[in-house]
Length: 427
Image: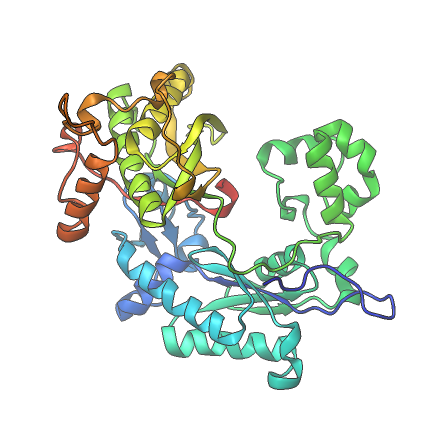
């Protein structure tokens, strides 16, 4: 089922503002403040060594996500630091999404704390998009106990920008005839895809606002930042976003990341951390009846620069061993950069997902794709080894006794850290 995107009315005018972008405010920190009344109104930091989330009271002091915990506490000495509770956040997310789907069947989840909703078909039944957004905010606060911000606009991009401008705990509607006045004065960093490097290039050219991007023109943008990025940014700056709200589409990738702080990590430590991420993602892959073809390693260095490295397997797989092999080789290839520049985050994505019925059995011609004998099942000369046997057994043990019931020997005695789903911009 497809919802509405950018379009025109029958009279040739722009389509109405019927797309909602709903985004929970400081999600993890808000759940902590909800569940512990003494934390309400106080600066809260979730995570110790690295900030996973910060309440708006902490953000006012300069605390930001992914910041080193020591730096965050120096900026906000009065902050209350709490350990993350992923199960509580997952439960809250499910409750909020139930309200989304009770509002409209056209819901496209973006992450655990945000979604797009298409409400064009509800006007005669429940009121205007603004009325629907206001009612949605009231329900989330009353039924789940969390503040949520909603942006309403004609396109997904404008709706997301509107929610960002309206935060925290706000509601902003961008009418079609007011799009230019709303978007063009904003800083260029508001455009999707403009990070620190791209922003620096644009600023060097005297481009500081969205209006400057629109005025620069597509050819100049293409020559400056490349064809795909240039066309993309020019389209956004000139209100072109044809993407529809698309519910029910299975994700094309899954991922997890771990923030590491600024302490030096040895290759052995990083290899152990990566193995833990692979194990978690492998189980998620099989639980979702998916097979992956591409393994993507994501790194962030001490200077906050990011790099990605990927390897595409010859055939889709659900097995932990070939995924781990590909991930380890990517990490080995990146190790000189890590040792030279330091590392603050490591993440892994499994992409090019398909149904697990697409997995094919092939000869192991690539070392990265060959399950090691120890991981492939015992087998005998009379009984062929089942490459899925170990994964099935470990999945069953963890399902019955908990995810920590079985770990690799290299992980014994080590801090498991906190691994969280990759944010949309990372996937």
